Image (cartoon, rainbow, N blue to C red; front, side, top):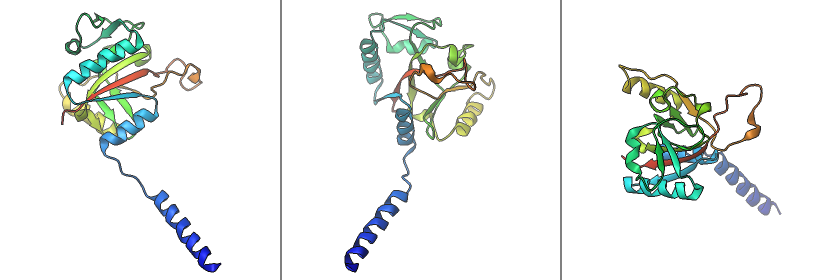
Amino acid sequence: MSFLKKLLNIAVKEDKEIQKQEVILSLDDLFVHNFVEKGGRFLYCSTKSEVTDNLKNILIENSWNRISLLNKNLATFFSKKDADISENFNSEIPVFINCEYLIADNGDILFTSNQLKSNKLSEMPLNFIVYATTSQLVNDVGQGLTGIKTHHRDNLPTNISAIKNYTINKNEDNLLNYGNSNSKNLYLLLLEDL
């Protein structure tokens, strides 16, 4: 019996050691893991044509025939037959937007006034489609803020915000976040650019 006990104890100790080992993910894997865990929908694209195709599929899947663009450069991913494009902010229709950075350690997406203009994130539509590239991945918020400071040295943007929840939860209002919800129904189109 003591042989069996020793064998079982060794197996249990090995299992505990395996469970204690920290898994180290690459920056992109860490972001995707955290992003999806928060309820975000992630579509990896290796070419710009894949971005266009995935965007069309999102519009069809959700029966969206109108979309807001706050950045005119993103209009290159659309044709007039895909959707009616509004370049003005409208909180009732989905928005297609770019971002500053993707924060890997918590799966957040960082925006500034360069993307949001003067709109608060809580006033933006519930339905978001975000276009980003793999070069926008950073480890944490500190690196994102440093990147903003470095890239926009002469004209620092304001209105720095992050979407932290990618599932719409109507019951999330509490004393601490009353009226300040930034939960969004969010799709991320991530283009490989490295």
